Image (cartoon, rainbow, N blue to C red):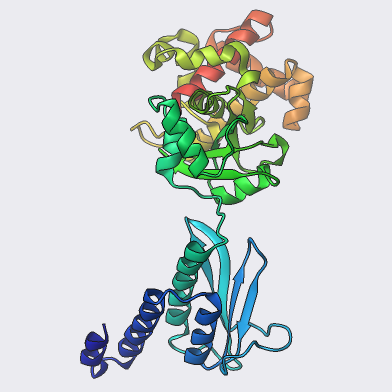
Length: 371
């Protein structure tokens, strides 16, 4: 690296400086220096105060360019970079430069953040929420033998004996580690993404603490592999009004997940709902695009489909026109007209108990088709 830097120094001073910084931190990492040594070296290189802060322990290290602990409270940071370990943000590194940031400060902070992550992983404490997906797959895998499953749970930090709760999560905006920390604040929790779905393994889950915008299904079985299967089924049946579902709450609706997709699609009620919605799946997703190879709906068609499905969903959940109107913030006569039009399109009398049951079953099957 140093030889390459020398060859490039005559071509681009910035590249030369950046490569020298990379080589500097590579040397520190090879020597396995600890966090205080990294902070001292960085402060000397930057010629200003360098800081390292870790979230889990609350530890903060601030060192001046003379190698001593920086006195007083931290000054304004001229540049910051997050420290990431196992896909989880565990801390921050920064520089407190009196003037504007230097041209190579960003490179220095990037390399310092990498070095800090390596030091934390090596020396600890580093109990991150994000886990090795291979270990999590061993825990929830249907073909894993019990000895391998128990060993994977021990490696993930779970004690032998207590039942581990399993949740299937879709969190398009919030990082999975933050979701895990929110729903299991007092006990061990591990998270990983498998097949596009978030997996949470926890000693306990407080379902009311799932953040807004997150959908989750919770398994009820004692065995993690069975609980994972249940959690995925519950997740597939969540809605905007019921973003968190426990498998035990589904009752007979869970049986629909065992029905082959082609059988669901061939049912007249489900087929009519698919036509009415424009595509199988979540109404919020359908408003953006069908996702089944057909052209996306026009904005007007998407709005109409969303209104239709929201009305049907609210009516099925409420069981009466007035309660549905309250949930939708509409006059009950407007909801009555919509329900009548939806019933005609589905060829189902939605005002009867049988018709309402058929609509609920069709909605659940339609959501399973869209998964």
